Length: 266
Image 1: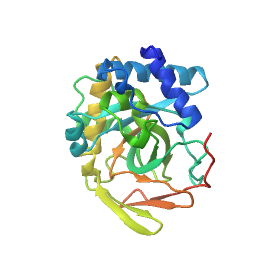
Image 2: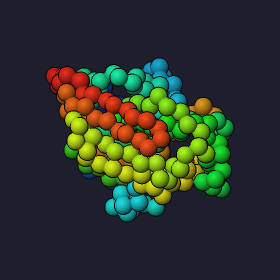
Image 3: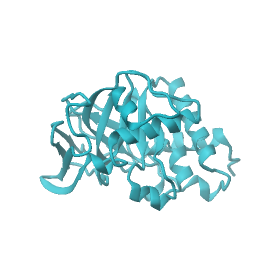
Image 4: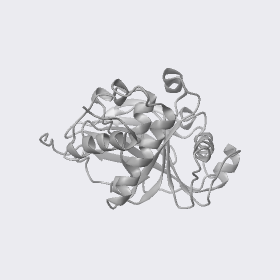
């Protein structure tokens, strides 16, 4: 019988990730796992990753869609941590020996030019701290069975973080209309989703400001050089072996990812 605490919850999630094994929500057994405790579990999980050779390279936002926030009973995105081991080279297929049930979603990605520390950050101040804007794909891979979880569960699980791709085009933050930047998502040539930057908290810079202010409440900040995934512009699509998934942006170019060969389960 598991004795639940911060460390045992983090270890449970880390083992599930390493073994490519889905698990039931921790809140099924540990009712005391709330949002604040979920972030403490996330911190412990990242501390373990750093001890095992990961380097923190940035921040990701989750639940930036207002419809998703309403379903989860929150009014602001959640935050999670990116490490260098999550970076996936352009052109390299999704490796099914690494993931449980990967999904992929298009994102507008910021690379920071200045530190950004809340509280009180506005979207204008946030955007002024951005060095460059890129297209991106995030690979999410919840450790929970069927992607079913409560808000504290997904926070503890580092917001389902798994990997990310960056597009090759870099634009200045004031060189394009981020609110109207459009994206078409295709799976094997067929359009499955479309959206604009307005889907991300009304404007990606608003999401960035909310992230900085949320992190400040936990004594954290965003640093110059950090990569910030601002949140999925559309719903995520499952990646299947052999699939080709593309996102075509108005000003940020296209990014194409393929599903690799199927891998046996452990």
